[in-house]
Image (cartoon, rainbow, N blue to C red; front, side):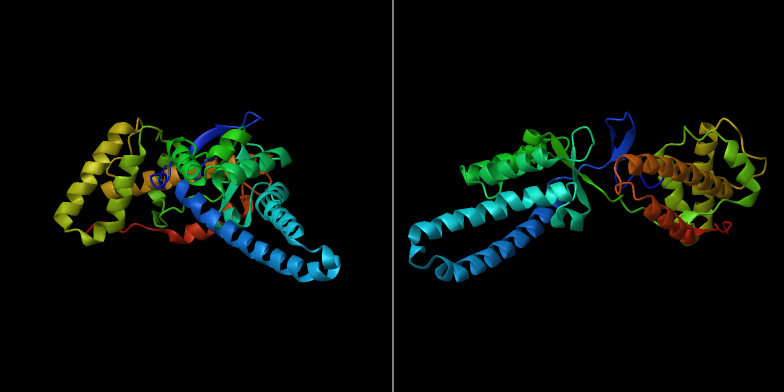
Length: 302
């Protein structure tokens, strides 16, 4: 379908045997999310240290010695690096502030929402091996990044231990311009079998129609006829006799978009039922309405 050339989502069969399209988060987006979360943790740690060590002399008096200071420091580190991410990911269903900003979410390997045990396992592995990595930090950092790069689902060590992975909540943005359905071909296009018209051919037709006014007429007609002949050869039902090439291309693209939109809406409805807030049905519907403004009637070739 048009637009899928920008991002090819993987398919996941969840616990309810529903197949949904997902995009696994890779090292780049996850690293940016980690930077945001790490910045928040640094601010939180600074605030806790400031508060605790400001009131400790008044609360403990002569008992506030070096041992107590070290103990409170350990408690603050555990709260910031272990308890905080565990609680946040559990409460938000895998969307920490950094992940929310990047449109990411942690889910179980079967597609379900994570629980406390998953968030705790991820945080424990992160504390000991990944971030900050108390055990051989530099070595384990390299191992973790290598694991994410080589993993087909972009999973880090914490994901492997917890049985989770991170996915994109947001769909890849599509190129906005699309040709409108030519009225004379609406009936033919609605019944035509377009399964053999692959994405590469549709993308070539889309680019051509978007730029046809900038191409010399002699070449524009030659390109249009070539693309139309290739499409006609792949469609069992021939178009009406005398159909201009540019009109055929526009009709096929408009019909493919209509069918793809219906399928995507159905998939998002199933996703929303299983993962509340993940399918974004209302947002998708609004985006479709807004996207209709980018649908333009294709002008005949000169």
